[in-house]
Length: 444
Ligand code: PMP
Image 1 (cartoon, rainbow, N blue to C red):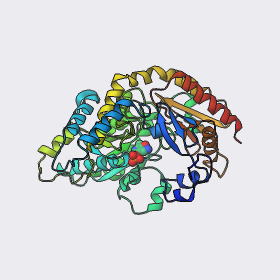
Image 2: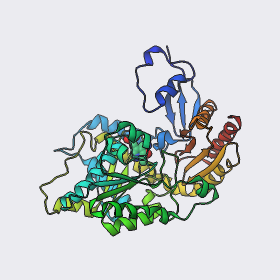
Image 3: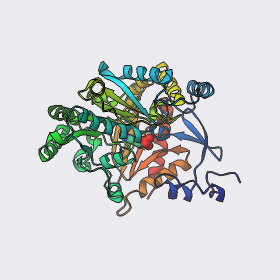
Image 4: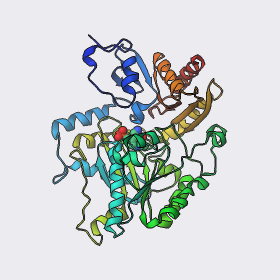
């Protein structure tokens, strides 16, 4: 039987254990995408579905772009695989060279490749701890994340991640991890009222952790410039700057997890540039290949790389790498993706569209149940008031209704997250808001 978007799943399609809660939610009402082009998916019923989430913050250049298809096809046919443990292939070098040129101030000199955001985070945490070790600062092992931070699902990422029930569930995680408070306080800081400017005060909590543990025991702080997966939490003004100042003061490395914000989402190549704060390490994934082939990466500041190559004990190498690090097909996809971003000026376009986007999403502020609307670049979060005891119900109902009306959104808790492909036209923005407005009027 042909699977349908709306009917029950045929028994022979039951075996796939889907990630997260999708397993239950999906199987109660299947939604199968069979093809995609630019701003739209086509589902198994042949319906066009407007993609208001860029896949999952991935396809910044839109779906199935010709140049990327061509590059991947050619690469598979030419050099399908070459592990980078003791060999190499030119595209990995070419890609790293191009990427470091995209980063501001020429300070990031090297790129470490993996296959996902979770692996990029794992790599960055290890690099941070190893960096202090090779400099003879072996006690610097503690890591600091942030409440409501999301850094993927590997054990390191869960440990520094700020989703308390998940940490509790798995129990034995990395030891020596603390969390800064999150930056989201609806009562006092609802973004709809204007971006709050007391970020420096919030970041000062890092001083408290330094006083508690002594800086000589702290390796790194990791934060997402905008916490995406937990509800598009945009930091108050001054927050990231103050974190940078405190890290500098105590020799603590600062890691930005830019898996979502990287590659143009805010109108600059990276959020580091947007906020004018340069971390020591940057993790990326998703938009690096436009979602076409799995890939993640860590950008490393020159001083850190140099420490490994020329440090006092250069016998200690970083014991870390993946079979598929710098996979030729992923590198080919990434190079063609960078071409597409550049040739089409997609980051500039994001900047130009962001005012229109802002006005459009804020027009939803007065719709039923909406308690906050947050936006920056081409991302937005629409927070709904929860039904007591049902913290995800309203947004999930919106998700289902939006899908029925031909649009894919992402929800997290009772927050609707929007992050369309950067090729979006104003007419699509109008359509997104129109559908959401209708949906919000229909839910209980
Ligand atoms: N870090 C951040 C900030 C993310 O948003 C995500 C995924 N949404 C990850 C890490 C994990 O990436 P992946 O799912 O590719 O492992």
